[in-house]
Image (tube, rainbow, N blue to C red; front, side, top):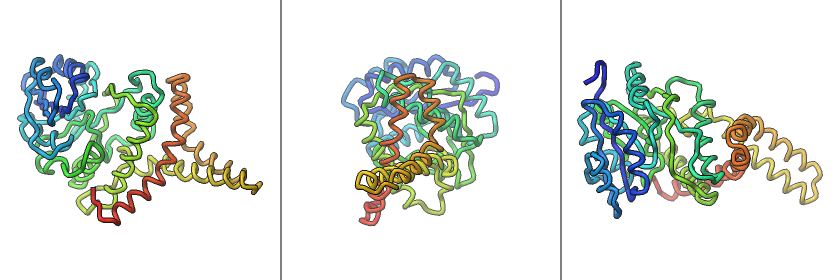
Length: 336
């Protein structure tokens, strides 16, 4: 084993991932060190994901937890032997040099390490660019702290001992939504720290249409509301997209501004002349928090970035109905 090298077990949950898994595994395999291991956890796939993974040299095991990403990750992590476990999604491609960069962060007295999104988006659709660049911008511009309160399992490393002490992800959380936020809040609440590694930029292969992205965002927002409402004293302060509420103030204020703008425009159309000033005030609130993102999006993506910047409007509009929907679901007895 290389000097000062920590053994790492890479855990990749797969469910019908034959189109992406080979591209994901190749850069990981190239940089494995002695003592590292690569575990692919099959979550009831019906395609050739398992065969491809095994052919490339990964250890393939079947998920024994509840269906979904959380159960699959737990299965892999509790079967792992490395000092650390690294969770990677089956559509997330690690950059060249990821192993050395991760080791440097591990050596900086951390219990967990979080990578960031790449600003480069797959395909040509503006919705995919918006999804990727939004997270990249949030991680690199809005989040100012060295240590963060959330995590994203597209590339998230944690000491195996800490993961086991926390009893892993809550696999009662359906799909792939807020199981990572829940785990991070419990981890930080127990006194551990998550170190941000912005130099590890992970490329995502998943593509979205506008409708798919808005559906994803609405579901994610409702899941976050339910998560906030069921939190208990074992959780640290909640994170929003891995940032603190203060760091995400532009988004929260924008959600208010967009509806002030809509109300003002509706009033103006209905005949109240002063409504236009209300609409202008709402837009000013919105622009104050998002002008930087709009400019960066256009600078990086050109026309695609411009179209992506416009998607902040419907995305912010979703927050209010998502919150109301989540509260109603919670009051009706839904916990997850």
